[in-house]
Image: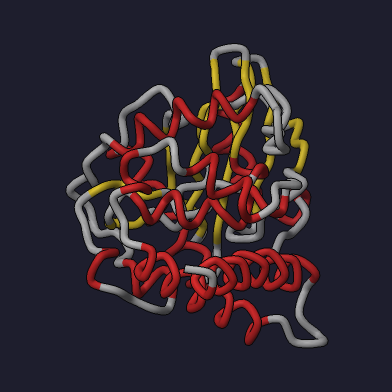
Length: 262
């Protein structure tokens, strides 16, 4: 759960100020895996700061830190610095200036995403502990296993279009898996951005990792993912869970439909 910057201990804000040259903080609009997520501006420029204090928050941020330090590539923001004080873990990431990607049909940002997917598909998982497909998704299939770095959360909120190209942020769910898993996880976000399930699959089919997977495997993935989100989308659940239940449900229903017509 997010807290206000003013509620941070003085040792935390001083540690940030010493590194950034100021502490003018602009909180991020989305995400809740760290108690603090904000762009901090000072005399030394801008840094995106994440800070965590709870056991879950520190564990999640430490995981993201290890992955970010291990991943080298133009699509991943660099880690600028880190420190711990007063039971807080504080990490400064490269600030990414620009709008979130537009994943709607026909958007030029899809080409930028395509370039990033090609690069990711060739990126071996770093030698750090990562999620397994089952631990990340809650279900498994032998075809999901692999040694590729898979981000698993490529919604528009984690894609920033900068002057230097697309940046993929928030590696808190990085997974070691087969490369097609990244594409299958992207289907829900394409549908949520206005693609029909058929359009989403046509876009994904340009990647060899997609066409190399049998339809029965995709059917199994789509059904299990939809079932998971349908279970999570209870009346008191937040709206984004209901959105994911809707989008994954659309894809699963589409796959059942095309399967019945074969």
